[in-house]
Image (tube, rainbow, N blue to C red):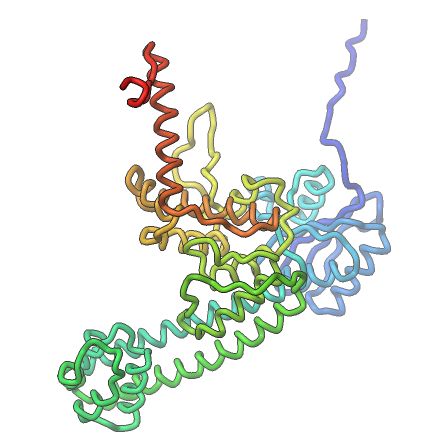
Length: 448
């Protein structure tokens, strides 16, 4: 009797009308299913003319979905053009499309991406709506300008230290009102410590005599030139930051969908590069976009709320629950487990701007007189500092998810509310432990 031929079961094709693109700096390789065209793999240039030809070819062949790797910033024009032409574009992580070792080329990469996409083995990365991407680009630009401004301040501090001008020992901020007035006078040619100390603001704790002693230095020409260059760079960046703030407010205006009642914020809103009035204007603009006031959460400042709004947007339907949301923020515990045991080594590093903003907000919760502040101090008592900060950021992320999905503002219960909850948990644990030992917990009033 002849042996029955064993049938091999391969991967089932789910999306036949799909394409895979290998993104490059000078050209892009595109692969579609072999049944759609006699030449299913083609190369297109990176210029806009060739991108239009790529879109025309994909639409002509009936392609509905396109998958591409996140390669630097080269994918952005391809993504935006294909999405504008009506195709469903999916941006995938490069770790999910790794080829077999020893087989690496642009042609094989695009064909491999198309094969994985056709079998439904790729998941797209989260990308907010297009109008939110405009705001995200501006907020990221402002963050870069602020970092450059901080470097200019460090350069000014370096020049002052080389001249032995101990301005930072008497002023908490050398680019404050008093510090900038003194720096501008030094660059203008003033060398008398008494005249420079006379520029002191009345709110400075150090007196004029202390300032005059600190401002006596070695006025070498090269150090003065370095100081003037850093000060000019700081002024230029400050002007650019101010212009970027105006662009951010202009980008927020079209996103407004709500008209909440005006409410005052109980926390100070003044930031490093914003006045109190500017911060309050930005807070109200974000409230019109999200429908809620994220600054009601303890330790959540206007800057943190702006980062969250720009990185996520107002639509959280992509995340089924708060656990998926926290996992995307890189705030969930790792799941690198094999054989029931955690794998050794550190997980791969991934950077999430919204998650990092929540970590910084959680780090400030230690001195907060609120429910979250009390919970954070309790975590610090039983775990190391980085773990406690991540846990508190996870707590804030779950609150933000609930606020944005339900459209309700945060209600503060205070330290007393946390103490009541902590006492109830302790009592529950004590009763459970007593029951295991064959005892029962009786209140003191009942015994008396």
